[in-house]
Image (cartoon, rainbow, N blue to C red):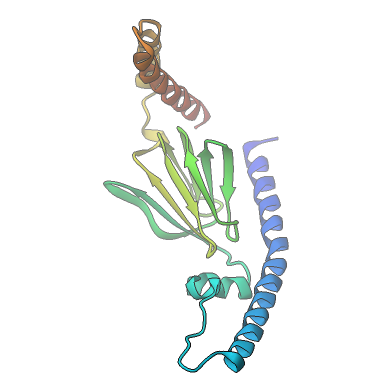
Length: 209
């Protein structure tokens, strides 16, 4: 299959999963609200005077997340992509984001379950729409997916894939491989291995662009 066909299939499957889960999420939210309302009614009948009503999980739920739980899944994902010195995407609405997690690559669409994932060296693909896809190489970081269809990606460094120099990447890989072979202790081996892993990931990113 071509990359375009594979991406279309991935989007279709992910959207079907998100949309099929939405009615269940709304039903659960509605049932939870009814249960809380019933409890609060009973509480008001029996609680001593000046006794405050107890808090529930929904008390601390963001308004946007609570609204989404009852209204359905939005069409767009709100993306915040931050580095210490820049923000390539700040509250931008996108179709989908693909991230390289330590547990495996996965896609983030509107309606994705809340998730926290550590990123490994690899490519973050931001699909603004069908014709606009931005790819960034990240060395590490974290991805946070929230219940209100917002995703936060925090990376120490992110470089557009098209700016990677293939020759420099290959040289870096050769240098770190030599350092690993000549390492005098486990610390030096670990340092060299990190460089090898990052350079191998960059090689794969350059070959795929």
